[in-house]
Length: 419
Image (cartoon, rainbow, N blue to C red; front, side, top):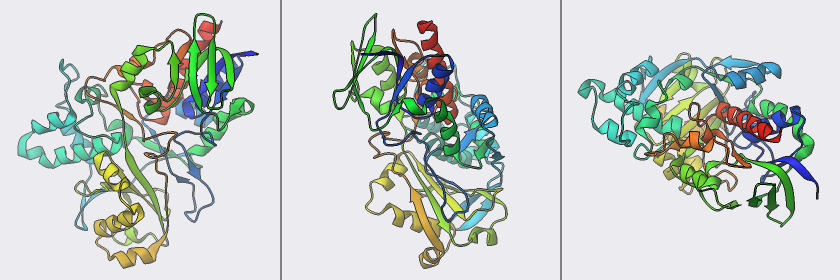
């Protein structure tokens, strides 16, 4: 049986980036993907009534994102800066929320990255730093962490948030790819298109000092010198993929991370009704509601609103019998409109249930209590086994940038070992 230089498990952004780096270094690869498509947590719908691509997964380029920016420039993909005004809805009454990010910073500045004993972000909030003066800002910060991190405030590590510096920076300085993230995935796929095996779920990996052996769900065996795991966090935490001999450090580090959960839905309407109520709407915050933030595509004038909820509230909605009905009800409440009027304006609702997708099982990772340094552990080489994916990049965890950076890092680690 022919032995390839590297087997890559997973064809999301991390796996495709790793394959690209290895191929460009003259190495042979096989990419094994359990899904029927590539892209992982990127799904872009084209040719909808929205007049522009609809993202069911990743949408934003957060912060500087140098690797993603380099690739979009290389691929000649146009990006647009996220803009627009932040408003807050209280029972349909709108108030300016700007400067939303600066208001949250007043709370986040009390975080201590040097704190020795880690605790939850909720425990931090319960200390009520800033007193009554910052009560609204603490509520906004709590809503932000639940939404941006997809986190339960009782589970997410305070230290991990503190180590980010300014947690709002990636959200406040963001861009979109005009043609959709799928166009970037298509570009990354080019180098290894002929080496990808779809509908191929890896069941077992065996490794020793001389080689790696991988078996898929049908018992087909593959041989390689190295293996790079780019699977979502839950597959590193459980026995979805058996690793022989076991690598305790991987399971231990992964076990201190948590897979975040989000509800994301794109509501396409027949007219941009919010423009009659609010000028230059970017984000509409509703911290007390189950769906705690809505956003438009501003400065692009598109007939879409994205509904977003993260953490426990998202899980609760996703467990309901009629998610779409709840989305419509929440939209009516935040804009103080009759449900019938919203239904008359509604064209379609598009969403993907990432929580119950067996190939993903959630949105993206965050650090649990005591897990602030777990991504760094996962980023280390483990003999002939390497790990990539957004969960392995501490500085940009949870983003496409993290996935791309990690795939490049893991590929270069493998290349050094192969040389």
